[in-house]
Length: 70
Image 1 (cartoon, rainbow, N blue to C red):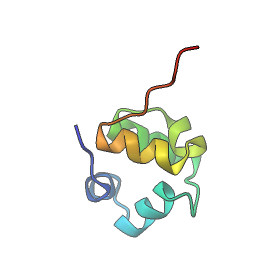
Image 2: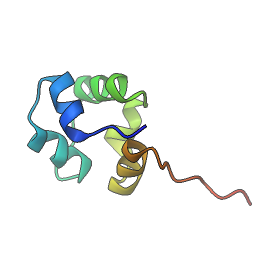
Image 3: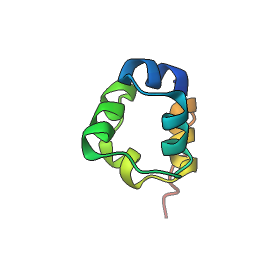
């Protein structure tokens, strides 16, 4: 299921610009905001705090990148 930045912004009561800055890693959310984003998206707060832009975008698009098994 694809989750849009607009949906996250609406649910969290923040601007789409703020969500985009977090997704593009230009700013980091607070722990409280990361937990809120995680609850909205069904992810873990660590994704929003430590994840890469690629990981966040893949998760939101429903195309989460799978790790290779050695």
